[in-house]
Length: 358
Image (tube, rainbow, N blue to C red; front, side, top):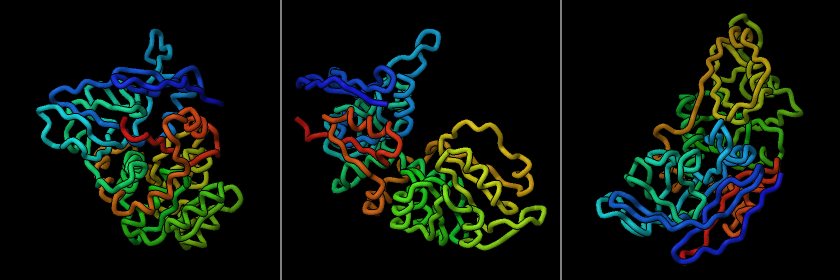
């Protein structure tokens, strides 16, 4: 699948924004720069990440909000970081020049880049009803914008770890060493969890996991997952006394049906499984196998509170989080950035960077 965009150089009173085009394509459109209301802030976007959700919107050709469920264009981008260039008279939480990260939530016009009227993959973003801890938060001025743009996906990973209630003594395995899975690994180790194994089918991802502190890695496409987990975490039994791995917590950051199969085959009595990945369709789930282990299934969606809890650690441990970025692409080549994100195996985390303000 390929992407394309129309080359536009915005005039001083206008800006460029990226939206979905025909299926598999993006369009760069010229819009008026936002007008700041008394309770608003205008953020000059300096970096914005591309998420798997963006790729799904591109594959659909928009969102089904038109007549009869027809597709309409969607302004993309919800992993944005930048600097405040204009403030409304009633805004007291910020100053112009502040470096900030943007939450997709808390905007009257809807979710940023996920169905609302505005997207973060643009040169200037209007943040309506700007408020600290609601839709904006400041970050240190020396934090690179590309790393700051990881705040949103790392909040997703942090919520997953919080949902797991992992303790230092727990033995954990993370399936999927993409940006979210590796973010989960980082948060687990920062939480003090002593034994974290990462499983994936791609050796280069497993190498990154080891560099980020994984205690062991498993090539789940070539190795016996249950046997390897038993080697790493020790042996235990399920409710029927059948031999199982002593793993306490299984985290699914892959979303593949094979993960469920692997977990149910390995899970001991009272193990937990946390789903953070978008789940791909599965024909069957072995519910009887879940029963035999009394497996607790926990869903982890988004970041109810973690969106701004992540920012301080992101700044403190920036060197670790920087390993998650595989590509930094300038906004003038945004079509190439989305093409990379849409091509399986071509990139891990793509961050689009913006030139200095004109």
